[in-house]
Image (cartoon, one colour):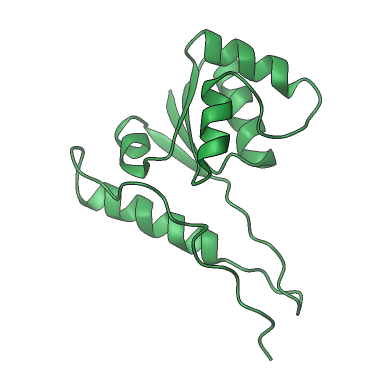
Length: 133
């Protein structure tokens, strides 16, 4: 199956590498170009036991690649996993800004069809708000 994984932090990076090691074609998506470059160079953007070796292997075999382009990821996948952060607000609630942004971009890419899309992700552009009382 062709899978896109949005967010290449701990959850997304490990999920992408494991799915690729199971034979799936995986494209990771992140707004951080350094993470995209690290994955495409076969290096892990996170520290986790054995993840470096696993990423190196699945990138070498072509099962995993990364991009910053939402449209490309949606066009090239059958299913998408959203693994962006939902950090805690000072009041204990979750900040869903990143989640809302990436799902809007995925929706726009799907609505525009297979040859057009939302382009580069910007789900980390707006910071989470401070405590709401």
